[in-house]
Length: 360
Ligand code: IPM
Ligand code: MG
Image (tube, rainbow, N blue to C red; front, side):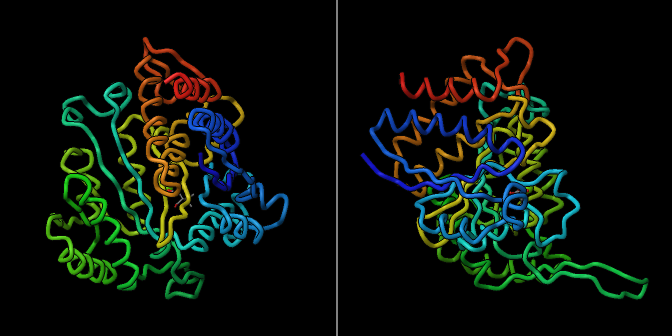
């Protein structure tokens, strides 16, 4: 019996429906294990802009800081696309990651056997399996560097800056090596050290951190080559360590190895236990409100939350195995539907996973 405070940030687009399905799954966990989760529902993103005029109200930060963990749906949509950058919905998410000190974003990319046919890649390439964990730096780099407009030699120009301090690289590298120790013992650090000064500092710093982890093999790879190797030979990767920007791009690419970005969770952590858990995908405004979204990414994000921030490991196992069983029985949301499987909506998919936990 455990009592935990969880901040639920539904956000925009499909955020509300994937979160409702996920709360149903967490309710099943509570019944099965006699836990009590206290939920609060602070605003973020476009919804916060509409109601409070800013994408991250101070109250949301305060509530998250008082919670044991934060679960987020998605932010953004065409409605807010023309807003100035400091009040765009995405800015709310970036500021929250920063305010909570969550510098390491962990993105497991796992291919389920039952979904090999949903991936656009040939079975030949997937035959050795895909089990990659991205560790993406989350509170630095070009996302947070100086930006603006200025007069250039060809007239007005805009700029963004990629800057990394030794400390920022060290702490995220440590997370990657620790994770690799518990896995297959390999870290591929991705950079563009043949061009960028910040990448050269990145590479040198990672090499120093590697010395503290003699059992882990370190491989350096340029980002362009990494983009190619992910498609050519995905089973060669174990842990991939990246800067903020490179990780954003490569993790979307890697998601397609598994069939759909709708399956993949992500957890952001810092020095404490509190983390922010969210799907990798965005707010998908084109399918919002149509009961067509895949809730599995958010359900698996909740599963990560239980073990990583709340120490509830057995419960995480129950959720993950429920997801596998429901997929094995042939249930598919539209994004992973293939002929001969059973198409279900977002709500039904959530119910099936919850029922599986109750009956396990
Ligand atoms: C992600 C998203 C965000 C990011 C956006 C919504 C700001 O793409 O979590 O990958 O770029 O970090
Ligand atoms: Mg992204």
